[in-house]
Image (cartoon, rainbow, N blue to C red; front, side, top):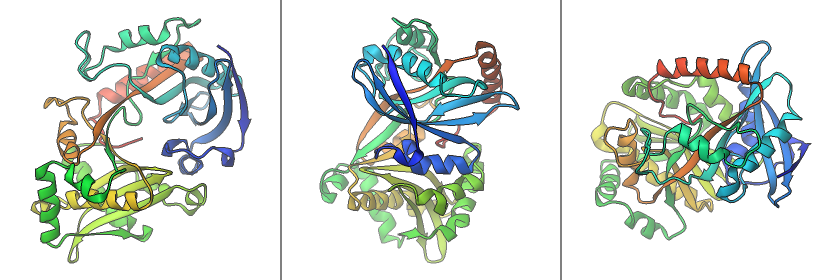
Length: 364
């Protein structure tokens, strides 16, 4: 398989439902120290599209390239490895020699059921060595490696918004519908807040991080998402939703809308007045607002890959599954080393960092 790759301007990115492949996201990441590069591609097997790559230094003389949830279009699953190999070799010719590997966070459907019976890892999928074996079959270089961690969400809960509001509400589990109504009866109000209230959300977010033991992102990360420089690029809309009763802010969420898909990116809640069920009202209002804007799906983000109480994301699975919808399994993050020595050094460092941190509940 051969791939013709042509560089182009960021504003030339095609409209997409994938937030992380938009000109908006390229600007957000630029503000956070990443260097974006955009390409058109066309393969000899007929696949074509474009992709956003983000380059970031690892040290003074080393860097890596990251393709967040891309490329959007790809081949049949039997040709995944051939396609990624050809794309990586084509990209390498356009990247600085300092780039030691390319990491793809693939949006493509996973070929493995979450309850795979043989050779399971903790995720319910085959162990990385078996997954690498399958993906590399037929490739020339046998060079694709499963990343140690999925940078965005490999297992997500997605709610269908294509039906009428009453139908979407009726598809929720009875307890979830009860909690939404309870919040409303208790006087919880959800509103779209101006970006000037972002510090209020961030304070709740830090409380949530401390309470649940995950590593908090910096305020600069959130400010970048609401930057006028980012929002002027493309048609992405970012909503800051806050749930309150009286003067008390109980919960918050950041929701992005890209074309026909809404993404729940970050959430936070107060440790007080939890009996008011504010997060339930918050998500229901987010779904209604997304539907009003023409969205067909509401991506609620990370869940455990199966109903396993031992998994650290099982609580999120139980909560999100109550809103109806289905689990989506994606292929996750894969690496293509360009400099094996530099890549090995990075993986060793990454492994030490990951072993010292609790699970994060956030998107990258």
